[in-house]
Image (cartoon, rainbow, N blue to C red; front, side, top):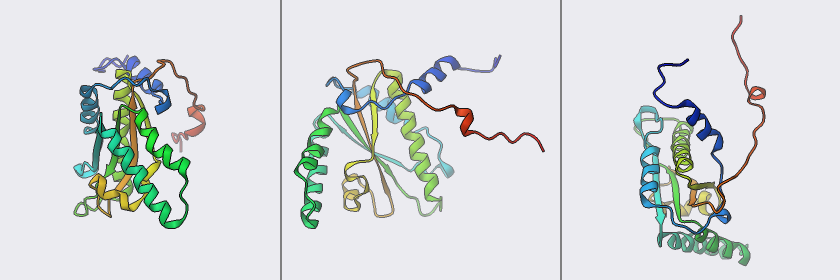
Length: 201
């Protein structure tokens, strides 16, 4: 059966079905090796991309860089919130402390290429595929991942910090850490309830 397969499809199926979001509070504090992060980024670079625009742009906050990210997002929140009278000390502390639970944080950017005239949704989808490549690579190496769209994700004035322009998008942050526990479970509904087959006239 499927003798042309180059890969162990049982392992591939298992990898995909065992990928989980592992949240920062579940990390052990152990550092993720830089070589694994680099492999994740290289695999992200092989995501599908219409007209080869390769719109993904990643900013990696590793080791002491995590502190820099924490200070940036909490500081920007404080500035914004004080200006409009919505400052919340608890939220400020959370934005300052939560990143420090991670070994590494990767900001996920989408860079527009106006000359190629690709619909924005296709570029967002390409970056999402790149993130899934990173997720699966992390899972294979036993690294925990969590894709967050909190903090400055939707703050327009945050874009320059991540080398993004007004026409680009910040799609969130991938938190990385070594899981404290290696066993996590999850559920999905029956795939057949979400699929329509069109095979007959």
